[in-house]
Every structure is written in structure tokens, then in C-alpha cells.
Image 1: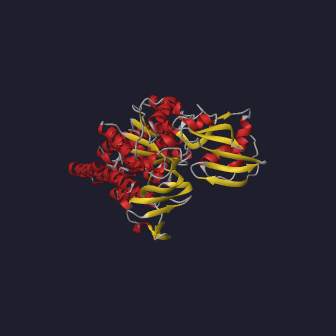
Image 2: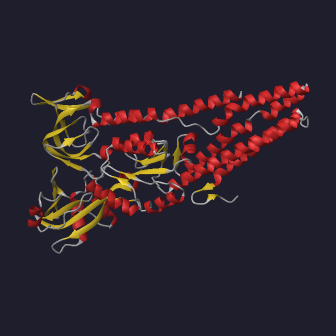
Image 3: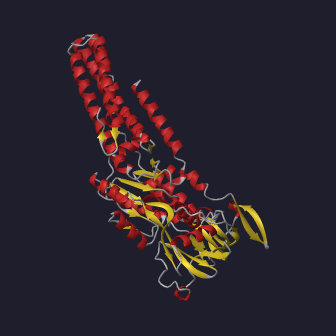
Length: 532
């Protein structure tokens, strides 16, 4: 009966884990089913699997890129964050490379196909996730280390008592008090209580085994974009020119971007709303991909776009020295051809990061590095602002995966925190993968073992403390259950307990284990166990 219960429990847990892990399927969905190919001067819609190297693929605004290739003509703004982790949209023109899985925000390009299917960057990403999940060692539950010995020992003791005493009642009492119900309940009751506590505090844990492994973590690795940063562009600075005010510059830009779906435009409109500015209605709206947008606002021709190419062009317009460094996007606002201001936007660090990093170190985490696909300057700035002394920049998904494996080769139990598609291989390979649940992509959440439902990084120290408290509770339960059973076995073997008394003692042990486990429901972030 004990073996049957434990086997059924293991099967149910495995079933639940498999249902929650469909990262490979979710990655496949990133590629569109069909694409428009230029053949004999005409646009032909074909299944993606029929596209061959050398075909010219037409990609319009809002469409997914189905292949890896080179832009032959046109201009577009692409979101490549799912593959590279770079937070800012990327401008693509003739001669630039584009990759499967990225999305066009605006514009239209004709791309000459170089790689398709499994040979694309997205295809390699799928292979990386498959390999990482297949190589990830199964987690051995703490209770399993003892359970395989327990029942054979009890049966042997019962037989020995009968052979030495000839008293069948004593042998039966040994079986009753030795039935390891308290022992079997030691881990499941603690885990269920901890999982319930975690879910109430915005943490989804996909199984008790991951909670137990989290207690062993000594290296916690962060992704940057969308994890340590908000993942959303915000206006960080406005420089008015020619006597204009900040609000005038912002209101004019917000009017032009009023109906834009571009992340830069939405950031400007949101900032104007927070300042109580009501953008006017734009007229004769025109969009020039890669250059900017223009509209009539209150009788004035307002343009919002990037800096012209070269320092000479910026100096000619009176914008010398206003071009931004890498990682910051700057938009010039012009009225009737004259610059009236510059708006700077960037992805910003979550305000809680420095305190979280310090709390993790206090909790005994030896390494707290950051891995990012962004460039060195952006990574260095954010690492310094977050109190992170170790970081790696310019990493592709395979580089992040290799870095995780390197930490593991050095003997660390690694947790990786990420949110993007490019994080999926690292999340799958890490001992514990933790995904940002609100900002995170479906792929990241499904490849991870744990999800932070509210994207609250302050839950990470709490998660590790809860995992440690859970393991302490399980170990205490095991020690108590074993000690209680040994005492009951000794009394039974000596004939001091009848079968009825043994049954009562057996249930008392189970109840005490359950009550000890229930204490985990009172565990609170930052305070440990609440007073009861």
C-alpha cells in the first residue's frame, strides 16, 4: 500500500510537470505558418516550410520574420529582444541582417533568404532548449533517500519479533506502529503548505522537487532586459530648444504619436498623460520608416524622428552634442522644420534591484551575476546602478547557456532569472529556472520551474528563505517520525503496546507531523514564521 501511494504520487507529479512544460511548442509558434514571397514580380503567399534559400520574402509592419536573411530593399523597425535581449527596437535597411522570430514594428522590407527552418537562429534556439531539458538531471526528492529502506526494515523487524517471542500480537503491533505514515507525510505536507504560501505571495512553483532544490541554490544569475529592468521604454529626459518648454515639446510629440503602436510612441503618449497633457488631434499623418513620423498639429507641421546621419547633420540643425550614447534612444521634435526639443528614452532599472541584490548576498548567495545581450556600456551602467559586481554583455542565447553550464561545472547550484525567449535555454538548463510571470514571454514561463507572477524581485529572497524553511521542516519531520517510530517499535517489541494502543500512537505521530508542516502557511516575507 505504501509503495502504491508513493508511486501514484510520483506519477501525478510527473504528469503535472509535463503539462506545464511546453516550451518547445511555444517556441515553434514564433514562426508564422505562411509568408509572402516575390516570384516573377508577383507576391505569392506560401507555407514557410516551402521557402528556399535565395527566395525574396516581403515583410510588412506587424508581421513576424520567418527566415534568417539580408535586407535587399526597404526599411523597417524590428523588435529583436526575443532573440538578443536588446531592449530598444532595431532599425533595418538594405544590407542589414534580420532573424527569424523577430517582429516588424513599422515599415516594409524585402529580405533575401539565407537560412530556413532548423538552420535559422530561432531553429537553433529550439535545439538549445531541447538539449538543455534533456540533459537536466532529475531532482532526487529528499524523502526518497530514506523511503526505499523504511518498509523492508519494518517488515523484517516484525518477522524478527515474532520469531523471538512467538507472540503474533506483538508482531502485528510492530507492523501497525511501524507503518511509516508519519514518515511518508513528512515531505508532502510541508511541500503543500509551502506551495500554498508561495502562491498567495505571487510565486508559482511547478512542483515540490523544485522547492527543495531552491534551498540548495548558491548562485543566482539575472537576465537584464525585462528582469532587472522594467522592459518598457520610458521618457527619462526632455531637452527643449529655441525657447520652447518641456511640456510644449512633449505635447507636440504626443499629438503626432497619439495613435502609434510603436513602443517609442506609446512611451511618449504615456508620459504626456502622466503630466496631465491632452494631445491635440493630428492631421495628414505620414510615416517614413527609419526616419520618423509627421503630422499637422494645430496648424504646425510637427516631425518626430531620429537624428540625421553623421555629426555634421546634427551640428547643422543645432543639435551638436545632443546625440545619445548606446542604450538610450533620442527623438528630435521639429515644428515647421525647426528643432524645438529632444526627447530621450530608455529602459530603466527596477527600483528594488539594489536592495534585492544585497538581500540575496545576506541570504548566503555567493554569486549574483548579470547576463545580457546588450552592449558593454549599457551593461556596465546598469550593473553599477544595481550593485552587481559581475556581468557579461553581448551574449546570444547559446552564450548564456554556456555560462550557466560553466557555473555548474564550478560546483554551483544555479538559479537563473529571465523573461524572454532568448532566456529559454538558460532557464531550462539551470538547476532552478525562475521566470518573470507578468512581463515574461510564454516560452520563458513554460521553460522555467518557478514564475514570479507579479514580476516582484523582492520575492526572490523570500523564495529562498521559504525553500530553506521547507527543507528544515521536512528534516525535522523525518527525524521526529523516525524517532517516534523507533520508540513505538521498542515499546511494541517489549509488549508494552497492544495493537489498539499502537494504532492510537501511530495516528498521534501523523497528526504531529502535519501540525508541524502547517506552520509553513504562517511563513511571511521578511519576517519568517508569523506569531501564532
